[in-house]
Length: 490
Image (cartoon, rainbow, N blue to C red):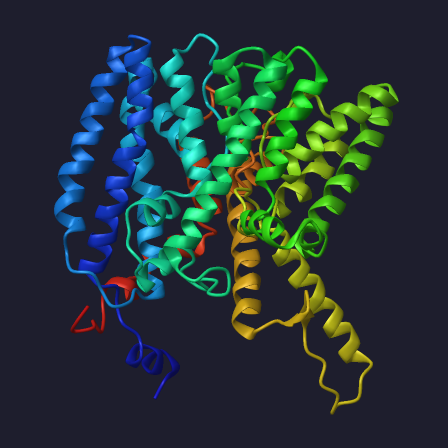
């Protein structure tokens, strides 16, 4: 029997009823998440948005209620969990783009803003945002806030019961059973920590920014490592560099795996010191900051003091994949861009709101390289296995890490060649594509009103692929997910 035939014999397609049920529940969650921008639009008398948000809520409730009442499965398979997650991040921007059109922008630009918001990227094709309404500015930041935590996690935390199958929606592949006793408990703890970080960040930013609305939009985008600012020139509009630093420190806190905060609360700060990814995040951030500082001094002629401040802010922004900046990326020298590209690609910790490949996967790749080098000098009978953080790495997680890295590179290279084919500078095009795929949002100036509609679509796909780590999109598009052997029961 051929390999494909053996795989098909033990594989099942996604059950339509299961996908429909959980998509309906997530739709109801999305309807609930649409209420805050509706309230803002009513508070500021911007009723053109109110009508549109009411229409979106009505559609979501009408479609979600009957679907959510479908029978619950005993368990949900990996392909079903990935499909539901992918559909959530595909359908949400389509629906949320409708209210944004009320700001007088085109459908494509509205869709781009919605995709950039929900994927927590922060790229924008608009010429400016300072002349936009309060509802529009809040809506962009709010999409980043719930996109950072994840529509699925919010759904599990607030709507779903103590179902083992719901765990698959938070982490379809591993489900992290050692973290908490139930999926809903874990999701609620994550939500609580996220709310606490948001509240602390709001108070801190408000103390420096002096404007409550600006502080609110900034903290929603910072803690989600999103990067949408209510100003045309990002953090440059803040009065002082300490204010910018506070915003970036809040963003950095979002790049730390959220369960680490829970462990620190119960086991003390020593648990943070023992966190391998946090140590790697600090080392990477310091390294990028030092390299940027030197580059800004020697390449752009800044003083060491100014270069140190700008290097720190830009380094934290890139490593946390936030996308805020107090220095125009288009003005950076070549070396600075080359420093930022790998930083953006790697990103923050798994289980955080940050994008990129994630530090854990980089550590896994380095450990595999180390094991291979050791084996070249070891006897044939020697057993040298990859260990990381005090535990042996299983073959499944090794395979998934390498797959994500490979697919990330493939997406970046394919998109980069398209931009180069349109005549853009090779380095600037690579920077832009990496920024989109790693959901960062820093831009060399390529992304804007004049960008070709086709390339806007390419960046949208990059942002979605990066947020879903490519695999969920592939499962959604894989024919075997929908056609083939189907289980007889839920």
